[in-house]
Image 1 (cartoon, rainbow, N blue to C red):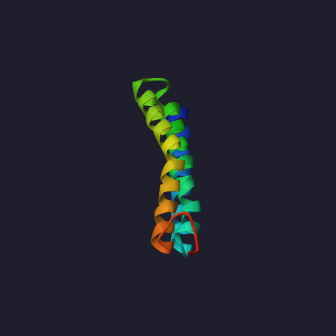
Image 2 (image 1 turned 90 degrees about the vertical axis):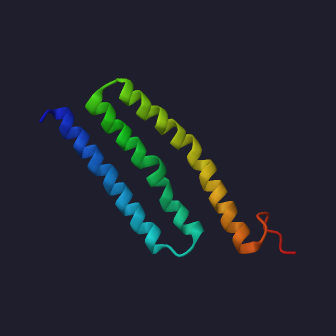
Length: 102
């Protein structure tokens, strides 16, 4: 096994650890607002680490380019998805997302 393979395996293990720890946080938290904080590492940090592992293993190839393109969409879409999730939770809880107490 080459050094590239070892580094890629370590990075993939780190990504798996991030997902496991964040998943435990999601299970422990009580409401959607608290749980959403633990979704961010799964949605952003772990994919970045996986993309780095692909880059280390493959170098700059078509596969790594596709990986980075997918990562770009995940990183750009993550905040919008988080906002939509919190808005939906707010609507479900209060009936309106604006928070008016009418």
